[in-house]
Image 1 (tube, rainbow, N blue to C red):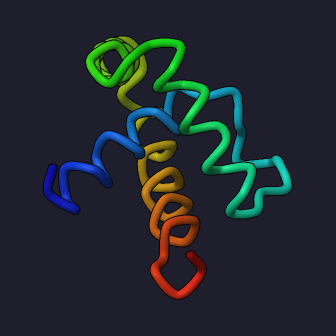
Image 2: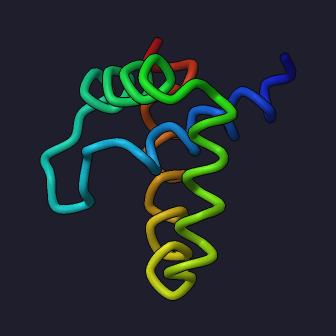
Length: 81
């Protein structure tokens, strides 16, 4: 799996997770939420749920995905690992 594809899978998993932008987030809680979402839905299930959300609520989904990508990039930054 390429690093870019892995980032996309992680982003989709965080997107469908229980975390909210108002939560206090640290790298550990982000990684845990990603892991739980992948276990619960699988990578394809996460992607399907993201697609559904973009179809039903594109106005809010765009903002959430921007927040999610920022979180993923901070949580999986090689300097923090």
